[in-house]
Length: 206
Image (cartoon, rainbow, N blue to C red; front, side, top):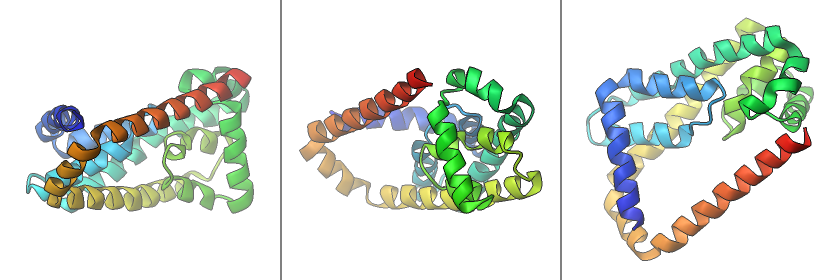
């Protein structure tokens, strides 16, 4: 069951990314950095899977993802820069950003300074929304965009590597899916529901 679902998903991704190549990866990752929650945890490992098949170059895939992150961060940063905190506090819910998200980001910046933006670029979920708070906090542009590229590059290389290893051992993974497909699907559903519940709970409390 899980095998069939994943096969369909992989087939769709393969159609999109192989059709557009590095440009497709770049576009998807740019959207993610524009606060659209498209998980890079799915995009970049799939690019790595294509690398394992010989359909894409390892370094091209990773750099395409990182450059996409950088490009998507630019409008997001300036939205926060010119809109300011009051704008985000009022309209942030339309970007799925709650006051708690801003408060958590403030804590990261208070603790690590501008380096927080580099660290956050390598964290799941947080990395999608970090550019808006960076703009609000008037992070130094040159430093922020440099750290965005560097942190995203590390993140993308790591995920592409995971995808390569997945592709090299796909038969072993398939055997696990056949044995534990129901348990794996149930676990994924529970995690997804938990994330959505807590995120929208924060939005309602904002």
